[in-house]
Amino acid sequence: EDQVTQSPEALRLQEGESSSLNCSYTVSGLRGLFWYRQDPGKGPEFLFTLYSAGEEKEKERLKATLTKKESFLHITAPKPEDSATYLCAVQAPKDSNYQLIWGAGTKLIIKP
Amino acid sequence: SAVISQKPSRDICQRGTSLTIQCQVDSQVTMMFWYRQQPGQSLTLIATANQGSEATYESGFVIDKFPISRPNLTFSTLTVSNMSPEDSSIYLCSVKVQLSTDTQYFGPGTRLTVL
Image (cartoon, rainbow over all chains, first blue to last red; front, side, top):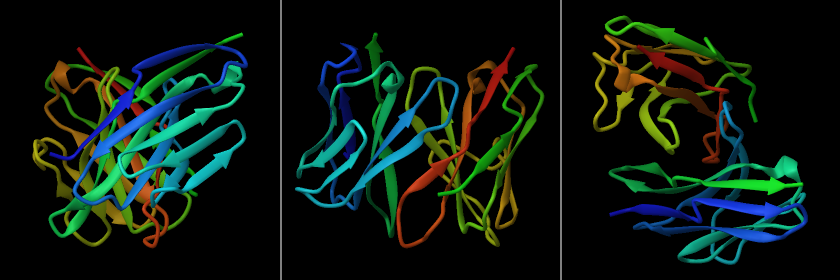
């Protein structure tokens, strides 16, 4: 069964303390992996798309990497405004089309 | 990307009533999606709404409960019918701006509480 698992469920860091969020997946054929950020009471905001193992994308303090089994979202020297829930989604074949399989998210809290 | 708005942003409704949620996009898009996000949980796809064709519903969701309209390339509505407290959730619309990429962009969501 296709599955996406994010860990940890929640992560508390001090401002400036770098860390990584994990998104592991088991799908029959990866077409793409997506990272989103979601603030409370808002819709998900697109961050990155990764398509193949070894690919990396960066945006400000965030860097996303992809292997054949998992993706990491690295956060370097985070600030309180980076606090949010980070969602991972994997696009995989379904019937003659594709489906997005969503992880449950990691709630990141950055303390000043 | 795309600028997406939803109305209402939130509502409190009585059991047995219906609510129609509107989704407006600032550009023409072929594919629009409706999701549900229950408190503390991730996203569940309700249906895909393509202009000019009937919406395609995911397992566990039916047209009688969640009728969808897609009258043009910038607008869609989702109705939550005969509501019960279990329908309390955030409802999100999203769009694919380009068919050549798979990225979806989301609206701000509609927070629904059913009493």
